[in-house]
Image (cartoon, rainbow over all chains, first blue to last red; front, side, top):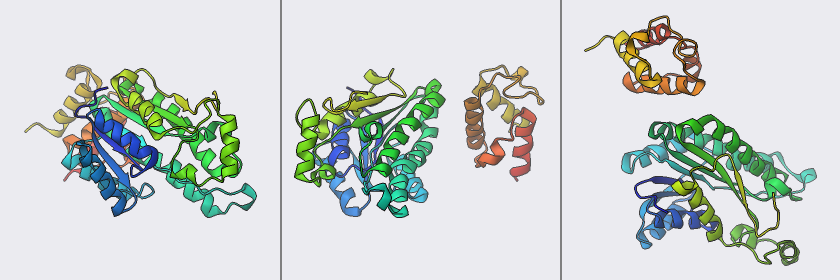
Length: 247
Length: 78
């Protein structure tokens, strides 16, 4: 896979799946801008990119703030050029049974996981349309297809980004831009490490491959979609879940 | 320096892939010049760059003919 010279923006890249995506895009030759919500997170990303001998940097971005997005995009354009690969990976969970869910828990998750995809995609599209080439990859979740108790908010956003991808893919396909969703199952990251052991054991019973996934196994699919090899896949949701849910 | 009218017509011709002589003032982008909705969005992007201005979405939607584009630029560019 060769992404030499392409500028890629990966949100939520300080750890977990986002960090693995930044690694692999960088290894394929892309200039990677990884974002985090804190200075410390951005520094971690910069160190990781430099340590691997890749090009790019970490930047602080609040995906719920339009001004922050405009600022980061301007900084990227000034220093590296306009991004033509966007990976919408940043996401949060605020789990609760719906009966107990607060407005805050609902709207925070919608804002970070779904509205941010709208904001960022809109912000990068102009550059992609001019380039007549672009890749938007959303990181969804198996939960968006299966549902999961306690995650009505999260599942709604993850189903939402997949529908968003299908619509946008229809709108901008004629300009050489693809929009897809990669839907991870249960991946060994900080987000799933917090699950109780009992729930983990139950999960493993439902996964034919009998193990959690690795962040690199998600990143590989994202990189494929970002590359020319994946150029004819658009509007698709690719499930990467060890067979736990077969769309 | 070409007039605003000439510059607008040149951009329309380039963006929509039509000959400049087809770009009459009264021509509608969609009905006469074969633009689809995304073409009109790109056309506005190109006008913004040529004239170094930002055209708000609610104004952009009203620019449906060559003359309306010329009028907008004339009215909004001192």
